[in-house]
Image (tube, rainbow, N blue to C red):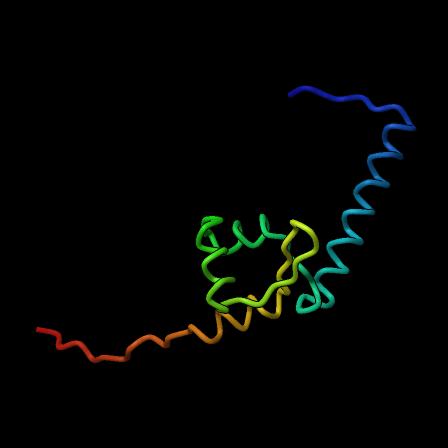
Length: 97
């Protein structure tokens, strides 16, 4: 196992960066419905192509905001899309032979 030695300043910088990341994560967790995803985050979250996202926007499947060439989606709209397309599992009884 290798040991990495940090100076006091490097250690302080690292801890400050971790604190900043932690604050950002906590903010996103507080109001996830108020969070916006950019197009790339949306593509990764839904595991879809750019073309599919474009089709969904064109057909009104998902609401979005556009500022210049950047596209954003509200997390609440993504949740609504998933909820509206949710299908419960069928409950069937299997015959055991």
